[in-house]
Length: 581
Image 1 (spheres, rainbow, N blue to C red):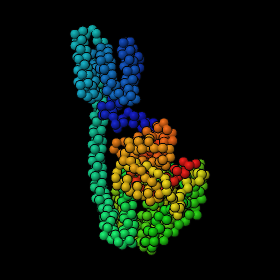
Image 2 (image 1 turned 180 degrees about the vertical axis):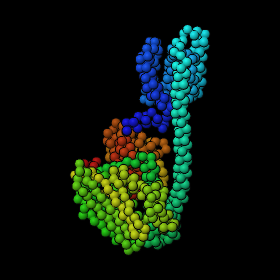
Image 3 (image 1 turned 90 degrees about the vertical axis):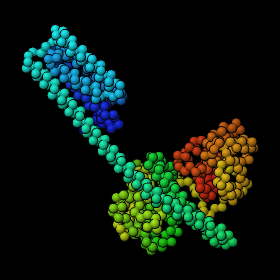
Image 4 (image 1 turned 45 degrees about the vertical axis):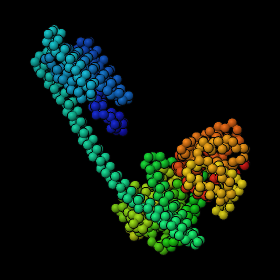
């Protein structure tokens, strides 16, 4: 059955023009009919010319079918098919099977109609005209020279032949026109569904943009407001520090909104990829709990965690995306739970199979829950049951969609069980690849990093970004030289001496010469000491593909904007330590 479906999908593929579908329906039937006709002709001892004509046309039909289905040359296939039956087979059959006093005129008329159905444009008119001339020529010759026609036996045989030709031709046309009607109905339904989907998508995106406008303005209002308050209270150090702290929180939330939209775009375009590295699941969970601890304290929610089932913590996974999944789900539980409730996080693992360990993560809260109606749409982009205004909680309606897609990209599953006013339980199942290696070390929070005396060349075309980066780098001891474009960076490195620059921080998108080209040219310097200088990308291009591209062009590290000083220090420290070794 599956083979028949595969064959039909090749013969009647949706992306084929209707003319090709019709041709692909008729050709197999014509091949079968040709074989039967050849066998019948041999059994009835027709003359050898007739047998030869049928055999040649059969071979031509088989090749026409192959050209149409395999090579997608349906136009050429249709021309060969129509020419072979209308200008070879039918004329031979016409003269050997009764001429005008037979069913052959009906077949000739059928051939003309097929030429009109299977072809379009100039080719249709040309083939129709050629076939018509051939048919008229046969009829004229048969009338003028009746001795060339091999007559049928009698009136009954003539009537039977004509009747059979009419019946078979009628069946062919009924099937063709029924197929056309069905095809038009299908196309009409398809167009209608596409219109409905477009209207639905437009409506959903309009709602999303409306919500996003509010969600973006909310942190922006906070940022601008706290900056204004800080400016008006410059003499009050505590007030300024409080405003800056709150501005940082609002900025991070705004960045999270933007990242969600970008992630959704990558997922929809099928371009989301993972960067699997050795990591410690226990440390990942502890990091997530540490990040969210202030939120637990603020809402007086007790976190009940059970990690006893985490037998194999060292696995290979995308740490960043796993963090994103856990932060999103647990943060959602905090958002939509009332004060003084509980959130339960349980992790368990089953026996290892083929180097992979099945891991189950359960996150359960005692929050508001979701309605059954919303649960049916919870994984649709831009959907959310409570918008920011009505719930007091900020979101884009993309978090759960992104989370589910990330889990599926990791090869896992996600299930939601929820009841309104009782709570929600989310179950994640992922088979992690075991890894015996030790996960990458992380610089501890308390370690003071000092780069005093180290000189960095900062390549950045934006004045504000350059000023911010310079201030931050100088705060940890760096001496900072600046270049506003890749061309200036190349020249500064070229004229420098060995060891003058310890590192280059290179922006990617710059007007005259981008960071990739500048890095390529520096790496091609004859002076190997200069050619091998550490170069770290510092860019707003935040996707994994951009990270891979940076390394392909010879960069040693990759940092994203907005600049996080701790991340910058960790990356630079690891690169400089590696250089010293």
